[in-house]
Amino acid sequence: MARAPVYLDCHATTPLDPRVLEAMLPYFTEHFGNPASSTHAWGWKAQAAVEQARREVASIIGAAPRDIYFTSGATESNNLAIAGAVRAMSGRTRVVVSAIEHKSVLEPASRLGREGFEVVRLPVGRDGIVDLEAAARAIDGQTALVSVMAANNEIGVIQPIAEIGRMARDAGALFHVDAAQAVGKIPLDVEAMCVDLLSMTAHKLYGPKGCGAIYVRRRLPVEPMLVGGGHERGLRAGTLNVPGIVGFGRACAIAAAEMAEECRRVATLRDALLDGLRSNLGTVVVNGTLERRLANNLHVSFPDVDGESLLIAIGDIAVSAGSACGSASGEPSHVLQAISGDEPVPSASVRFGLGRFTTADEIAWTVERFTTVVRHLRQKAHA
Ligand SMILES: *Cc1c(COP(=O)(O)O)cnc(C)c1O
Image 1: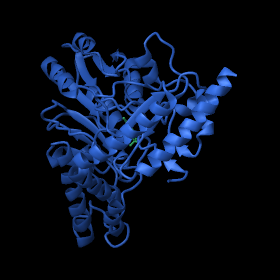
Image 2: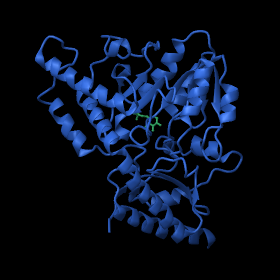
Image 3: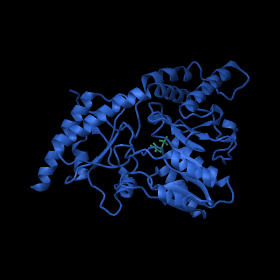
Image 4: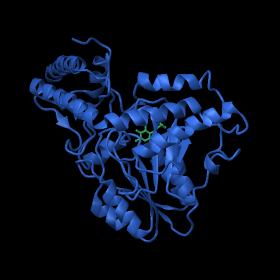
């Protein structure tokens, strides 16, 4: 039986796959060249590695390699997509986002709101899925951009991206997808889903932190945030993070090859976790629909239990209350608020993020620990 600590916080970040590390290592030392150095072998070697990675990253979303631009991660890509694409598109005045987007989408959208754009936040149902009727009403000839995430980072719910992409396309609006949690976990295709801009990040799929990419549909104008040496065809200046990019490419290639098999394995563990908690503890509420959800996500609430006491008592298992970014503020997460509607947000909510290296032993141990702690806290609440 596994012993603490157990890492079940893979929506916050994932460990580096050893195969990814192995691919990266030579690019720190032997092949340290700058891909912008076009006159010698060190530069050529680095450039060839970057272009290989660009093909691997493009392939996992069905894009052409030249439509991929490397960035520092999904936060930067989201900012570029929201601010850069909307500013480059004159005339239209509305921006439509879902209420459960990551803060790195909501904040740049709010900033556009302060600059005079009308920002519409689409509601979600209790299942966590964007209200498609509200979307159809909001997306019109005045809409510059629609941004809806492929999969949510808290409750793991998968959005009807292709349907929303079609609505945006029909209205002549741009469609941006934050796919940070979805890349390598579910199939994505920028053509079939009518996606114009898509954000990715390496560290959510067993790659390194500080490296990501944005897909930009061919010839779509995007105003850069960083200007300088004209790297990445002028969209994002700055010397490329070659080891990070190599790792990102390798991570995408591994995920593409192993996605189906890994999803089955992880979903079995996730289902065992829920079954174990339910059979030991009775009422365990799943937040958002289970049917349309990432295989590695479980988000539950334990009624009658104090959330803070639960997380303190469970300290040897790395999980998250609400979102990784929201938990520090102590406020209930905007995602849980959005799916709760008029009902109070449940206090003791836990996000389990399983991953490639999670074992059946770790899940059994987690069930045992939660059973002990929740039973104890329930007794205290009723004493
Ligand atoms: C992690 C995450 C981000 C931010 O990505 P970084 O690369 O860490 O900046 C954005 N959106 C979603 C949905 C995420 O899960």
